[in-house]
Amino acid sequence: MNAAKRLAIFTRLRTANPTPTTELEYTTPFELLIAVLLSAQSTDVGVNKATRRLYPVANTPQAILDLGLDELKTYISTIGLYNTKGKNVIATCQILVDQHGGEVPRSREALEALPGVGRKTANVVLNTAFSEAVMAVDTHIFRVSNRTKIAPGKNVDQVEHKLMKFVPREFLQDAHHWLILHGRYTCVARKPKCWNCIINDLCEYKDKTPAPADA
Image 1 (tube, one colour):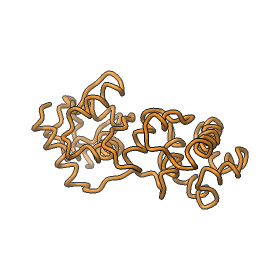
Image 2: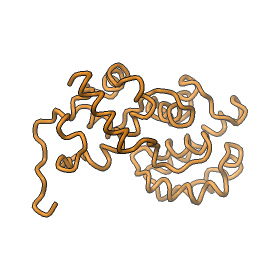
Image 3: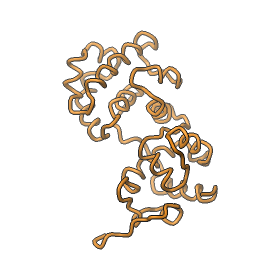
Image 4: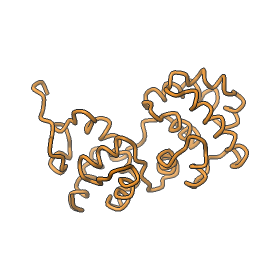
């Protein structure tokens, strides 16, 4: 994989989807933070169903604290690991109120100090809510980066480092969304839909999936 191929790949992804964004529904940085926190090992669709019920009732740190853990759980009980996530949401809201005036901090260090918030979650918030050119590497991005050879690495930290190094600067802001969506809908885990892929001829995956007979 060379610089010319990477440029062509991201040019095509941008042409196909000029303004990509997360599929999590949110209107404020806080709503995004909580949605991402809830989304670990869960689908965006499932999280959106829960937050559509929760946010009209409580969509600020203080409002969720006023709701309390038991009541919060009634809204998020359809999401996997909801007991642990509920405790993390309450603890995060308490820190936001006590230390940040109820606002979501804009520094990685402060974000990663919140319960349940790791580097990936912090990067999603920094990129999507605050328009910083950072890379949140989830399972989709890890798979696509390795399979295509855009940025191969043995772990998420290596892939993140290589993406930040190799993705052309003009694409960095949106690259994380393009790669997630590509992994979610085209370059899927078991049988990638290579026959329906707009970067098929640029991808260096050797075992490309042939089109099914009914495609």
